[in-house]
Length: 520
Image (cartoon, rainbow, N blue to C red):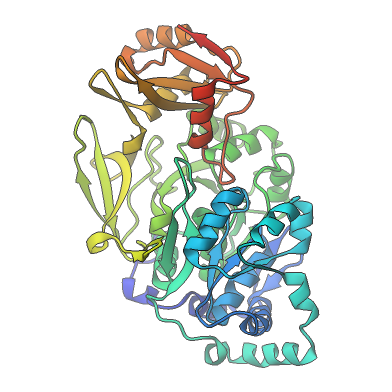
């Protein structure tokens, strides 16, 4: 059951105005945010802090300037995000796990001149060398230095502004840019994506209209806010709908996070399959007792992860689907209508169309249009908007009679072998069925004889191509889809978002360096 009907016109506001509206509705004294430092913040605290910091940012940046944000998921990142909006600047969320080369490219394409970060974060994450390197492209400003300059007059001014925030915040139109994000880079260089205020607010309201959330529920987000799932789902969704959110700076602390989920009484956990599986393995019986469900996105959910949570903890796992270009949520299963194996139905307000792909018999490419679809891609020439508002997801899907979407794979993740199209996602599924407790990634490499060949990279140390072929013959999987070579590794490389790093996987498959290669 949905909490309310989605009304596109109600989302035509700025992100900061949406925060003020939530504060008015819930009350400025409502405790809405907490992080690992365990210092809860009310709406009033966030708004006053945003004005105090925003006032200082006006002195070192220009109106509507794109300002880099190099911070982990934390209250500091949330305040910085809203401070930039209060000051009329655009946050450009930088992925500190992307490496210096990708980050420099992102800084250049977005025209970032100033990067906001934290000395404490740089020290704890051992990123000082990265910051120094990025300093050759943009000015590095540490928030601790700004806070030292916030005096009594600044605090009094923020207090006054907090009493009438709508009057003092910088005006922004719904179609103005609200954030610059960068795609995950799973298959190549990240792309700059411009999302508007209406994009973000619409997606929050679409989710709230799709799934009913109890007013007292607490959201737990360990995902990075430089990733759209972490930003919209983990930060903006709770804050703009009047729910308390808990931000944790790293999804990799597998033993700590289950204990914190229990300690804060979290009811909704956001994760990827990779991270959720590790939390389930590390947790104890009552760590997830308060969870109503887990929402997983960014990658396909394995049945092993779903079974582990449901059998050990009795917790429902809802798989969703999105794209940075769609702010990001496009579809998600619902607690009352969960269809494992699918990513659920599209959110309200989203149009779709399907286009057949030559050589692929089952499924078609999904294109979407709606209020949450981006303003455009950033490039050297400026902004490249989607044609007529339609975004080509690049994903091959099917829709069932209930409108639930099944992802068959990305168009670019099909190999052409002997004239036949083979889904690399299906290959990974076959491997997961045989070795369910391990991670697998398939890539297509050039083959002079057959056009392309499939190579599987797996962290199952005993993975044999012959065993996978036997499984395929027993279970009716097409033999042409079974890789002739498996490269075993200690860990399949993943990005900071939890997605498989297919660029690194391809390098491993091509080189086979340091890997145990077994050919059938």
